[in-house]
Image (cartoon, rainbow, N blue to C red; front, side, top):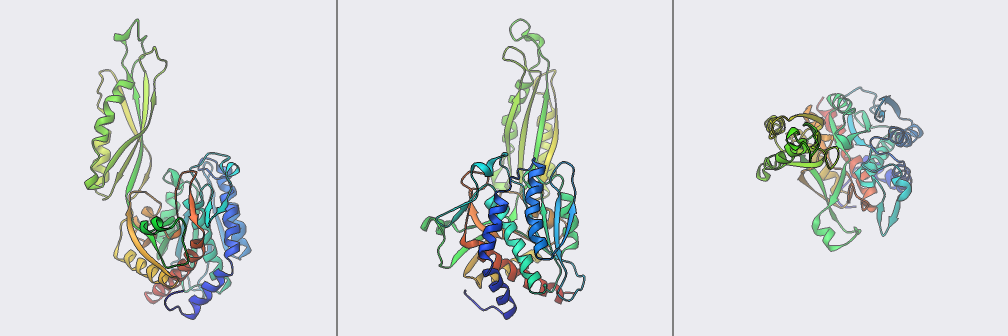
Length: 412
């Protein structure tokens, strides 16, 4: 361990060190719980893994039922002195992008210091360290502020059922730590396939792009493509002529990208296509860019390129950008100082990816993202975490939470 650490924080760190094997057991149980976003029973079953853990540590559990997606779940711990201040919030999602049966095909395994399995980095290992931080404070009498852990069920599709829960909880909180995966510095990955016991650099996230996921539906007129070609109006042709203008909205210098990522349509090969569709991904940096770009996309989609066709645009899901406020800079400083005590240097990068942390920042709550264990390969069969970072990430988060609680108390 590097740097100084006071007695209370040392006790937290020691308690967590005694639980390292139990952390691995909980991670195995969570990864092996099949929880693709649209599999409500599976996502709820993964939630029950956490509920049982929370119950075993005496935490106050609340359920927020949903009839389509997995239920929202939270665990709460009062402040050490019982004062009802605004809580510090630990946040994470338990849904994954993988098809049903994926954990059966490739369950949690550890090979050469890396843990593998569906959702191991994104973000079940983050849920594990948050759960053990809650348990550590419960075992040691609480923090100087109340603590709240919220786990949601549909982040991978922009949290249609969870956004309201996240924003409501964030409005009551004094700070938010979101345990999406961190990563190691590229130089360290180039030097070694796995982490060593030497001092290392953890890369977390200081800002994220906003993202809007849209579906465009195109309507034409069917006709026999041989006998009555002129009677038809091709929805596919209308769509095809709009793909290039949509992509042309991309401006990487402004941090803007537009991607037509899915496409389909038509009836049969010998029929002028009466319908077509595509799904569009928009990424942007500044909140003011959002309406301008959605408007430009809508104009391209809805103004016909082929006479006699029509089209509509619908927003399927949306992430808000994560922007850095002065208060979140202070939170980053707290986390950086905490990490240094465990031999970890911290840098913060901007990410083009999206996360629920944008919602919490948007309601004005100081937010730090990507404080989970270090890993990579998210959304692929090669997804992994560096197993030694499971404990150090938990210890760093616990010390950062303790210090954030102290500062929140002093600010009352």
